Length: 271
Image (cartoon, rainbow, N blue to C red; front, side, top):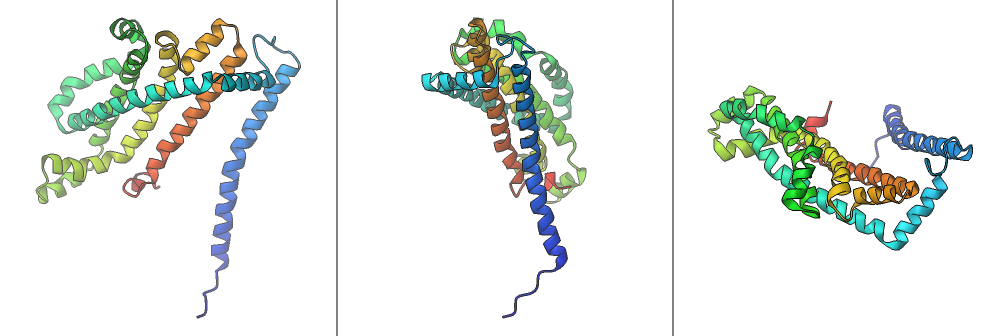
């Protein structure tokens, strides 16, 4: 059997894809290295005193100390747990509420002003109430996460329903789709790409809020670690925690981004 020859255009296309993948990997690495070099240089020339801007070496030492003591691992687990619970609760209620509002005009007109009011109200304003209602620990932090993410998710889902082409519903009417069948076979699949994007945005909000929530209502967690480092004038430890927060946030966002590659939603991201 004679194998077909690979054309020059195919070879060029493969080479371009490989080159693009390499470039996507190298460019962020180069930027990170430049930032680290700039940080090291600023520390080396003592542009800021050591207590105001710790050096990369001091941060590495602090990272090692926190890991060996077990504090960092415990704080990571505590923060991830709170974000997961609060975010899942918000998504469980926010997405169905958004779907319902998107399909009922009068309910939308009645509830959207209130939802917008709470969306623009900073979740940190709820901190005194969260502490009074739930005292300290996981519950106030989870409550703040819910207040921070429920309203954006509900409104984003509702807006996504409004963008569904009317032809979808006309076809669904021809097939006599109603109620749950209409929701599961037409509405939800049509808005799923936008819902995934809303989940990623809301998760970013949750990850920011958890840091502030743990500073005042918890005895552990990454936010509490930064607060404790600040009180002990250990900015090297604070920077260590900041780096962990950023890396974990990016990592979980990349996991959520994998949802965009599912066969049922890939169409929403193709251009």
